[in-house]
Length: 463
Image 1 (cartoon, rainbow, N blue to C red):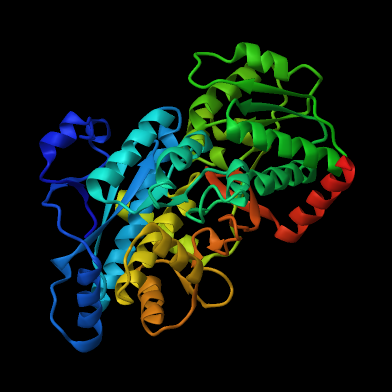
Image 2: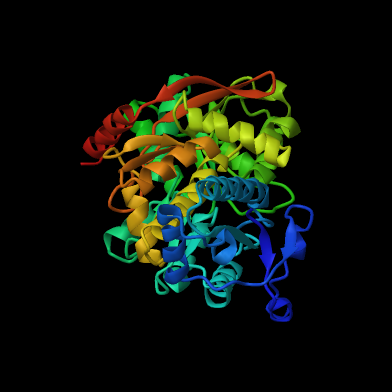
């Protein structure tokens, strides 16, 4: 069973400010003693699975850390993403326990409050006090960058980010600054921005305005969208940055309306996006909207009302027909009694599953669970060289059995078939969605080949 834990060093935790009172009611807390984890325990469990040697499954455990925005600007995203990651870890744990292999997996999440300094502190404490060697990574690119540069890479800790899409990390990896220890289960801005531009053009929009989060993600996505949309033959009315948590965005929305736009591309979070949306409507902006993956949240639809979203188009990475996604959404609904629809749930689930599978694989092979070892295994269990295996407890049992048998596997997750490039980026197609009867309905798709064609047009345009 995967649990949120407080070790016997409770007093030290409180003195460090680690006692997570801010997420009370979201997480189930249990007191337990920290157990010693090592290669010997993994080897003994491997023997137990292969030779009948009787070792208790409680003899060792691996803690999977997470640093996520449970409060702050991205709190509305971070909580369900954390739940999805926990579900992934829980299901790997249930699958490996049923097969009698590997150590107990424990999910331990810390709140960054959507602040880089707090995220770095939280990661240091997970690494220094808990011995964590792998983290489910932050929601915000602005938090992930200092996390990598200040703490995780230098400590050889694996990070799999759930929603950090900035192209900054691709460039860091190309310079060798991530040491191969960074992956993300969501496509980078260089793909998402192009897919959003293609969707907007197919929707019939020719002159959108853009309001964008004044951070790494917002700037990169905005720039990629503008290039792609112009390459398709459209023009941009205006682009205006915003800072989060403002009581009103009247000034910013007034500027976006300059240039007579026919639509609005909202590079927002749901919390501020509601305000942007209402001010846009209040100042008679056309009711045509382009929404990035971060706005695909049922809470946003419920708040602003479906009637005003009749011509809102939403982009999301993934494949139209995906059994892992369907299973994850059904299991998420049962586990949390909450909607599985929303940004980052599928990528959060896959991050938890991949780290969990890598740890189980290391145990079965008698290897350590250091960050570099786990990163190597993550590459081995993704990519088209292996037989496909899916999510859900039953699917993960089959995946673990295949790994135990020495087979290569290709994990097909809730985001689709995962194939990381040399820089830890994943390439998946996209689906276009609209709202119907309060639900997101797929109305089209954007293939990777189509994205590549538009990117080629952008290169030609800029040369």
